[in-house]
Length: 77
Image 1: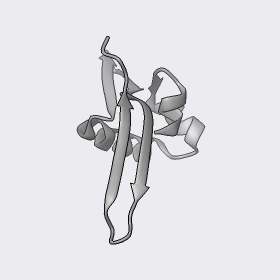
Image 2: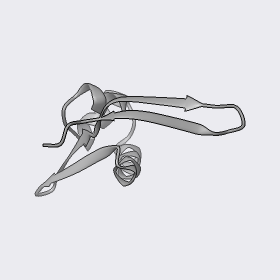
Image 3: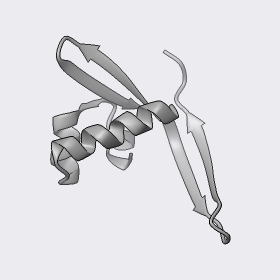
Image 4: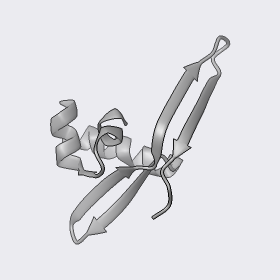
């Protein structure tokens, strides 16, 4: 998520290169982030471009196992 937040848009190969994770792992992570609405996917033929849908994201892990997220969304296009 940090790599996407620092860049405007990236494809899977570039996210993989910048994070040091393999292509398949990055693809699975991005699919989950798309489902959560944190990342937007655009398709240009076979090329898939991903964009973070937040300006800032704060994640807090609280005692008792709960998780809290606060985000500032990107302005709509």
